Length: 218
Image (tube, rainbow, N blue to C red; front, side, top):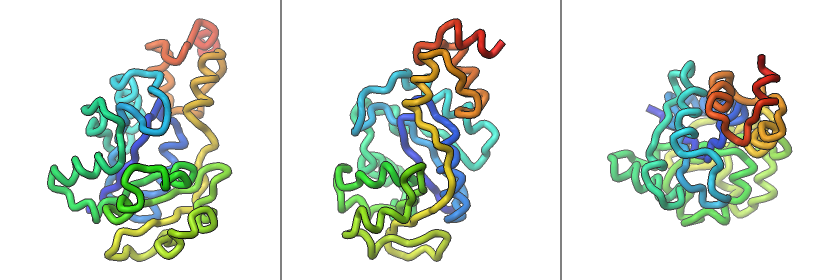
């Protein structure tokens, strides 16, 4: 079975995250992708919503996608959610990490040199890098020339050695930061997050949601 891993703060999860997952799944014929909400992201500030709310929103976003599964693997540890630590946990659970596919956006992978245990990390699993608005996956060849020999345009055959697969696919131009800002300002987020996630945000008054937001949906 080809298993993908998609980590993130998911604060909140949005349609761009789901687009990245779908693109990776199609390009590499993945059977399943685990969504891994982080407890403490290593490269940014503390999340705005609690771990339980972010986990719940991820579950709601994937309830009609049987190939997507939400895992609390990273939420169980209060330490920063480093990819290398997650791979350690999966390895301890019996997974051969060299057969796993870590999914990320091209904007995030552009910062790979700053990730813990780089470059050894790249020998521990495959990476699938999906285009994001203003960050086409193919641009990484120029941005990370030292990795050019390991970059493969997907779909393609899967080499035995862990590789980096570039997936050029359209993904929604949306970010969690912009969604939080819009909610705080009482603006619509319909179409930016799955409907069930929007309903959860409104019900629990997350991200500074106030009466004006509720009125916009009645």
